Length: 380
Ligand code: KG4
Ligand code: ZN
Image (cartoon, rainbow, N blue to C red; front, side, top):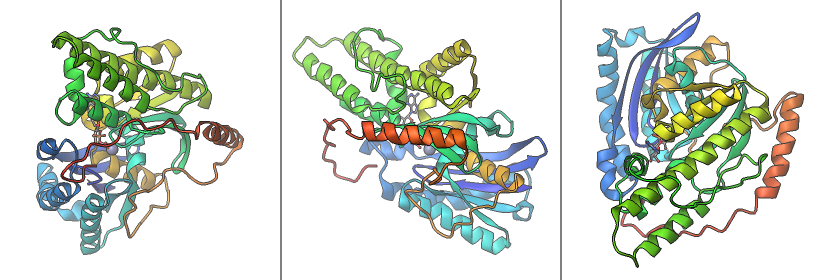
């Protein structure tokens, strides 16, 4: 079975064709058109710019993917597109294009949850079928999430950020330090030259059993040191050290909480995805921590950590192959949730109750200390 996948939830236009076989789902061809250069001058993603680019790119990328493997539209058995969560205007373009294509070809149309795609991406990237149960870490510009994946459509939230996503924190700190968007790769580039122990920056929710994240305190601490530096002699080493210390603080919490989540969920594997997983220090520290704790770490190469259509097509294909009723959504949902209202099973129920209790305890979110800078355009 061959599934064509389309991903347009934010600022990447991505198209992929996958094929299922008895032991895995393989990517036959895929292409991603990044819009980073267009959004960079605004310091973030401008929804209208993203929408226009998706509209322009899709009619070029779909034929390109088919041409890359010498196939025509007849070779497609189903069309899949991201249904949500994401930017409404961006989602609408990919979803509408996919629906129109499915109708024209008289093939099924499948709506895919972007987060489910991220959970699955480490598997497809490593050419293996998904193996439940596992703990998934998603760390991107929009999400920081720890998920206990019990099976298709059976997910339990173990932890999430109470304020900024990890990638968003990288982007905001980079902006504060005068580095371009997106901030993650820029901070990583500068951090290589600095000392990660130079500044004592805070780690959020240090309690062992709390799997939530918070990056606002860390951001405020960086701002404090940055403003202090304005009163001192300019010194580039100082900003190298600040970037290195910030990166280390984010990496520390992501690694520690992921390992803790695996122990708490009593599983053996950790699958990680999202743009922040492109970070070399994070990848290395995760590998080390998982090796020490006897956890199987499944991590994709960077092209599969960031948004891609292979994960969307692959999720649809694997669910179809597993006999799961596909979600033939006839609309997008920018706030699409990943979590079933009622988890099943004793362990799931126990975990869920514990999480609800913890949530009530941590619902007193720390004061947001930063106010978004006024911009000329709406930046997402
Ligand atoms: O998954 P992604 O491409 O898009 C979203 O769904 O958000 O993630 C983009 C985020 C941005 O915030 C970017 O700064 C961050 O991932 N990122 C990184 C690195 N590369 C991208 N963060 C830290 N280190 C990196 N090398
Ligand atoms: Zn994403």
